[in-house]
Length: 393
Image: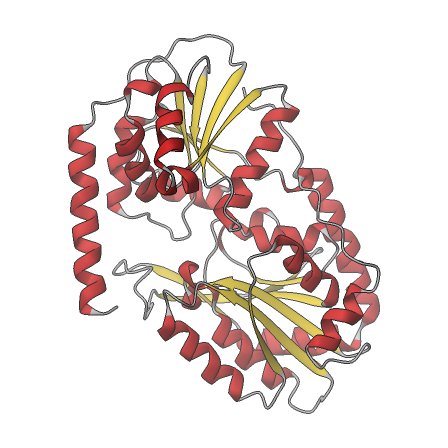
């Protein structure tokens, strides 16, 4: 992290503290049957948080709940939209779900004000990827009545700084209807990348804002190249976005890819959801040798469409990944080290996947088509059976 970014980070923390101090705590809510809910989230953002908010909207509709969508993307961009939210966004709703993590939520509450939430049940739907969340998140404790989070791993983390009811509400991935892909999209995507129809393709999609180190893409590339050092028809496609804010991460990724002599294909994302599912359709395996996950929406999406997954045997992704539906890779625990300082807690731990195990399983998967089909079917069934709508109120 550069000196400018460190200073900016400290100033932003102080600004959030000032906002929290100025706002009064949330009032008690009326204990009535909840028929309508306002969801504050990055509704229109083509990101993990945006997808999570959209899934929540779908789930509540399945519950028969009327929904008012409060899009934070528009709040920060359009003054007229903010005014509309302040005047009418929370009118006649019984509850409010803040489906953005506390560091953003503080800023949103500073804009819309607390008085709009008076008398309503307020829920924070938050997720964290390490065993302890940032202390700064504790600023939001006085603005919510309870917390939801999508995994037991994240619940245990949030318990360390919030003295509130916290319950696991999994993302209802099975409610997501994947965009329709063209019949021959597999061949089209491969052709654009210079990959043949019958070649082996592994895939990962990353946002640099989620930390290149946490996603552990560089080590995944090294493991892939070792597993396929004597095999010429295997490729690892890495789709990325957010490089304009993280040029250092992009440079690290490019250097790692250059060592592959053409086996590593980097693709800058167009931030189009259809594009992502085109890549799923064109791939044989999704690789997520992550250091830690709060849940793992990309993993869930891959499993939903029948794309086999290789994942680290650690953290929130274990809500999804089991021994019989995934290539689980054992790991050791190491101290958190992130060159971009997106995750900067001292003495915190995250995973280091077992390289030899990952290499061995990759090699076995490449040579065993029956294994691919078995994992694909089990993964898809597990998502459909366990990640549909649940009764939330």
